Length: 262
Image 1 (cartoon, rainbow, N blue to C red):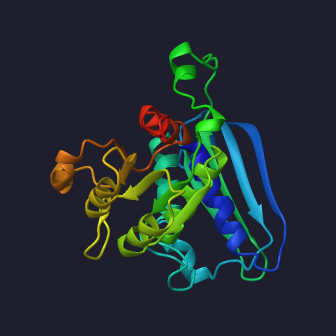
Image 2: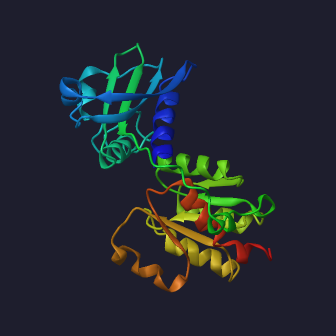
Image 3: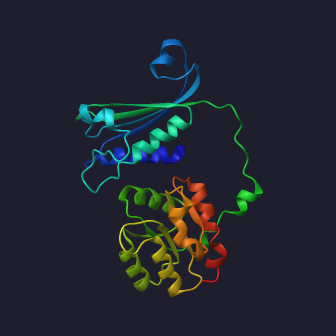
């Protein structure tokens, strides 16, 4: 999830610099002990510090204490879900670290987070992992359907990084029209639960009505399986948010036997 955290912060910095600016990411090793460790509310030990700094518009003082609250956002209506920083905060705290933000209006923002350093060796890629990597030639156009703009943007970037051409839709009705009119679409990646009458399950059924073996990947943030009861008969893989790029790639590769004959 570290990659997703950095991507979230980089996207926030980009949005804070609509006319351009500087984004700097620095990484350093630090030993925290005594009063310094207490200051950042962490036990003594060896840590990795990551700073993400920009020269953007900055953040008002009254907003700073609320930045890690779910659904709180400083962006204009419709530009952000308010989940990005809360997800970063959750990742950092669950990893045994802490995070701080320094910002002034007109003077940019620096997000600093520290994580416990590990001396464990990097594991070599196993043969089983290599077998899940799809060949570039098989990476065909994906229709991505997600109603949250910020979440959709992040998934789009991950798909693009994996080499998949991406067509986007913000709701089920728009996506159904694209499926009907864009025959090049080869894979459907859709949020399982969306507002409106055409949710993820209805969209998956629509895709399967066009072609019985249409490759479909459902993504969801719901941990409760009861919320997905209406898709139990679809026999499609489900990927739970948040997910790493490798998990997304493995899920898409699981559709490979269906895409080979297309």
